[in-house]
Structure formats: C-alpha cells, structure tokens
Length: 397
Image (cartoon, rainbow, N blue to C red; front, side, top):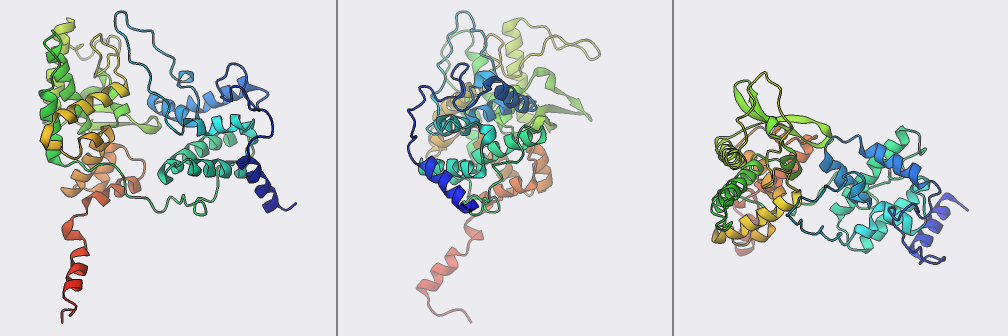
C-alpha cells in the first residue's frame, strides 16, 4: 500500500467506532492504567520533565489542562484553610475529552507512537466537535511543543505535530480578528470607579476588599496577564533607576520590569496599608536586611495567594456594578480584555510598538501588531466611499 493509502487507512480507522470494547476509563489519569501505554509511569515522568521546564506555574497548569492531564500532577492541591470553604472546581470545558492525551487514550494509542496521520485525525475530530480555528491552532501548538521536547531528549524520532497547517486551514500567517471585546479608556475608568464602590457588606474587612478590588483592576490596566498578577509577591515591588517597578514573571520563565503609574501606585499603597493594619504586619523589611517569607502581592483575607478564577469572578462583579458605563460589554469583560485595552490604547496614543511589546512581554512583535486591528475607526475605512458611489454613480472628476 502507498504512503497515501496508509494515511487514508489510519484516518478511516480513527473516524470509525472502536472495534474493541470501550475502555472502562480511557483517561491518562485512571490509576496506574493508561490505555495503549505499557509503561505509564515512564510516560508520566517524560511529560512532567517537559512541564517542569516552565518556571511559571500558571503556564504549567495551562499546558497540563490543554493536553488533558490532571492539573494536580503539576499543581498539588493546597490544604483547605480552616473555617473557609473553597468553591468547587469549574467543570471541564466541552472539548476537554478531546484533549490530545485523552483522545490517544480513547483510541488505545501510546502518544509516543503517534504519527502525523493520528494528529490530523485528532484535528478533524476537534473540527467536527465545533472547535474554532483559533482553538485548534492553540491546541496544535501545545502538542507540537510537547513533541519538540520529546524529540530533543530522544523519546521519539520525529514530531508528529509538524503538519502542513495551510492545508488544514490552520496557517499562522493569517489570523482572525480577535474576538476580545475592545475596552476604551472610559471603560477602564468606569471599572476603577466601580471597584472602589463595590459592596462587600458591613464586615470588618469590607474596606480591605474594596482596596483589593481597586488594586486588581489597577494592575490589569498595566497590561499584565492574570497569571502574572496572582504570581506577584510583595518583594517584586522595588525601585530601579529611581522609579518604582514590578518584577513580573511572564511566559517562558522570563522576568520583565513594569513601571508603575500613579493610579497603580496609589491603589497598591492603599491596599497594602489596609492589609498590614488588619494583619498587624510589620513595616517592609529595610534595605540590606534579610527578608521574611515571600508574601503574595494580592492575597486572600488569610494571607494566601488568590486563585485566577477568584479574580476573574471579582472582575465580572465589578463590570456588572459599573452600570450604564459598561452597557453592552459588561458580560464580555475578562482579565485579558484589560490587557488587550492596554495595547490598543497605547498604540492609539502613538506609543512605539517596540515599547508596548516590552511592556506586555510579547515574545514576538507580530503578536503586538495583531492588536493593531482595534485601531481601525470610521475614518480609516473606505466603506463610506463605496456607499457614496452607490448613491452617486457619477465618479468624481
């Protein structure tokens, strides 16, 4: 049989229902068993070796979830805080069972034996399940990154995710317009005002919660990722070159310095002062002396690190409380929308794109350029000229 015939046979087999009885629990985390894998512990160690190379815990969790791994593998559950019940974990997304490793388990396929035909069949399954092109692009990129590592360490001979993206309609040369809502400077001011007036009841910590809400929104207006906000420690705020900066841990384990604006400085000072007052904490450790345990910049009432889901929910409450100022967009506000707003507003105001790229930690300036689509306005479109031509057929001389 030809190579083309081999690929077609594989795709037909993957599209058809399994000819063998269904695996009772076709998940990569189903105890010691892993359908299709003879040495599950060795495979697990190889996966964790790859994930451990990412310094940012948020990145490790994101990749683990995208591949269908239990997040507990890379982020052991914390002991519950006495007297404080945590909300239940969010339900898996509609595509979670089609994550690459779960898909392999369902077909009793050892991921290390996967071929390009298997990856192509998986992408077709995602498409049939309604996954958008951008979603399929991201999921494929994650799988490609994993196999790139496995090739480097000699676990597999070639990267099966090195598919022809153009033929699959997944070319990275052309990108869809971002679905992220465009927030204006007026929207951001409304969010800050709403955060300052958010109702937290009449308890003794109401003022602390209000200050924390303002601090969260203020930090997001600096273009930070939500994972970067929750990962900040108080020790990450210091002076450099005579200016107050935040040392932010971004993607790829890279740190960058983010300069504080006056609104952010005021918001952090008010929040940390109130927090120290209620907690009885000492003043910050003087320069030159040993610092104590690392303390989160944005913390729970008991001093623990906030979860991203908690701050996401907080931001949605703030957007809802903003009232008419956010009519039509409140239900689409999320942390990335504020990061998106930072880039678009900066470009609209004439900031050099290289400066904006450094501010937000984009690895490629092409990513920053993609945000330029939000700068389009009524004056930068030819639509009105065409409309004029339709009403006045005589072209101007």
